[in-house]
Length: 137
Image 1 (tube, one colour):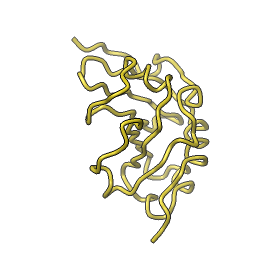
Image 2 (cartoon, rainbow, N blue to C red):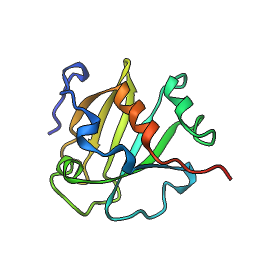
Image 3 (spheres, rainbow, N blue to C red):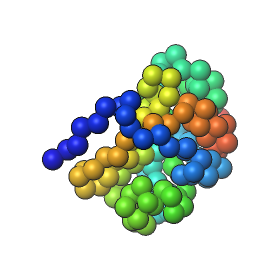
């Protein structure tokens, strides 16, 4: 049975407590289905169409509906996924822009639980500023 939660009542987390922003890399949309390193976790970022954060992205990603990235996981990221070090293809961290902040939804492989957290927009801004981005061709 799924648990319903009011988004405003979701626990707040500091994104920097979960991941090292320098270990985040964005990728071009067409690369999202390619294999990735076993030590990385997928991150899917959904920005509002007029989000100011789009200016932090390389031109090739600014108009994308979803921004795809990977984070090299540490213990905090593994704990989000119940301590698993190996992951399934459908596991991911989703960051959805929502009411001036972000909802972080941790999509589990077993689909039994999808913890939801609130994240400040400033955390996502810091992540994007410190992430590695693809070079233009």
